[in-house]
Image 1 (tube, one colour):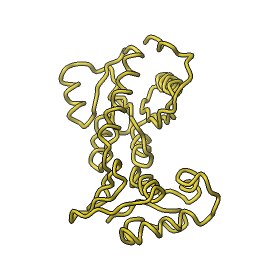
Image 2 (cartoon, rainbow, N blue to C red):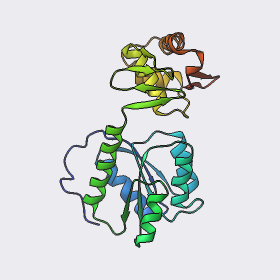
Image 3 (cartoon, one colour):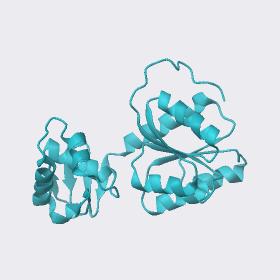
Image 4 (cartoon, rainbow, N blue to C red):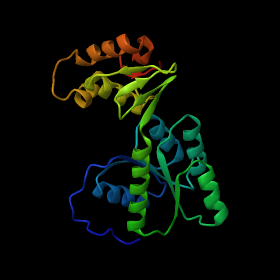
Length: 231
């Protein structure tokens, strides 16, 4: 594996990336590599931990080894897809036969790279997956409706549209990006309303969203915070 070119350049913030790899040396190398590229990297050393992180956190891309303890890499991808996790997945493995590559893609993975690999190619493939994900993400599901990211409005199942203010949109977008995650109020205030320290700002905008879209659109998880509901 060759070193990436231009490694001294300042890294951009490329978002969160999950590495699921049971070989600690390889996992550490990948974590360092992607961190240098500007990703916030999480590492799982087995399939069970990978499944937990894949279900509980939002990631731009997942890089998953094929041969994992606990849950095999392909089974891990299938389980994530089965519950609606659409994050782009790159399978990284030593198994390079045609039937193995086909099995990897059929499991729900978006790309398949065989070890040993060139570092520049790995980085390029991850960037390509991230671009593909961003270009496809024009709407997010909201139960029976959709959140239109370009028009900043909610499309209802009956064909109607509901416009949102910028802050309403940002709050709903944050919840809809990670619909299984419970967000505490402090996290939401920091991420969605960084310009104010008002303790009640999140509750106020949850109220506004419910008034426009119905009480079920945002779910209260008592003692923990808020979670995406459904229209």
